[in-house]
Length: 328
Ligand code: BTN
Image (tube, rainbow, N blue to C red; front, side, top):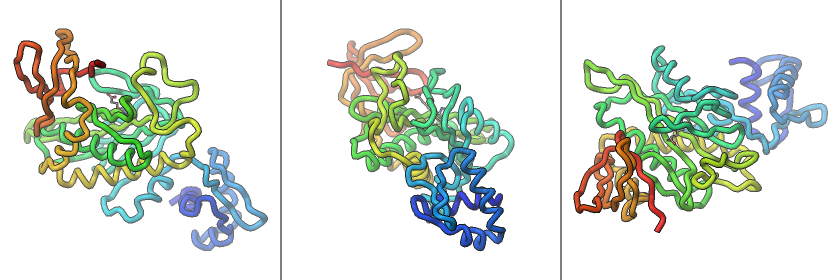
């Protein structure tokens, strides 16, 4: 490992406390000058590292810079092998990871970005991804699933995200079929799974699970077109330093725990119980137009079971329609 990365790993593990430069040099088997140079490089990249007296370095407890080290710190006890790549800016972490998947990257590679310039949402929509205030992450999976079961990845991820953000914020998290997580009636998270099929086996060659979460309100607020729907998990003044690294790690942990048991579909009960739509009146939106309906249930295959005004009951697949809850 590069000295700089190794120094960062140790400082992340000791965030907020002084770490002697001599000890860093000894542990890494390099000179104190090499440690000093590594610290200068990290400072240039924006890391708030202070020299404490003449002897030590301290990475501020306030540091919120995402890095493989800051995320990996929270997963030291986790058995599933994960590898994190962190970017300052990308068009879309899903797009980057799909390219890596095509080139043969293994399951467990996770791409994380501080901002996205072309963040993608479901049904061709965009996902607003400003810097510093969100989590934009994509996880590469190579599941042994039939293509028709790919939706289980999205539903398991929604349950994992809901659990993690509820624990972190204390705010109840609901799931809006099929891929959004809501707090207090507004969207905090969107999930987009993009899969590539293996036509010979009928299974998936790979799937890229993309998760976007609004952690804090963006500078200047949300753009007008989403300001009535979107919210952030924490308020402007909340003390959330370092929270993005921690939540990224915890979401990976929670998701992979469900992923190992995916075909059991045991998490579907929780998915249903967290539903933001069951029992509500909605507009079903499809290319053909909008139809009012009442949501009866979500079935074991994550289809939305609705009753239309004429009494007809239908199971709707997420690939075909989206739904807007009616405010009554
Ligand atoms: C939606 O709201 O319809 C889904 C949004 C998914 C956003 C995430 S952010 C990380 C990953 N990269 C993307 O371009 N999209 C997903």
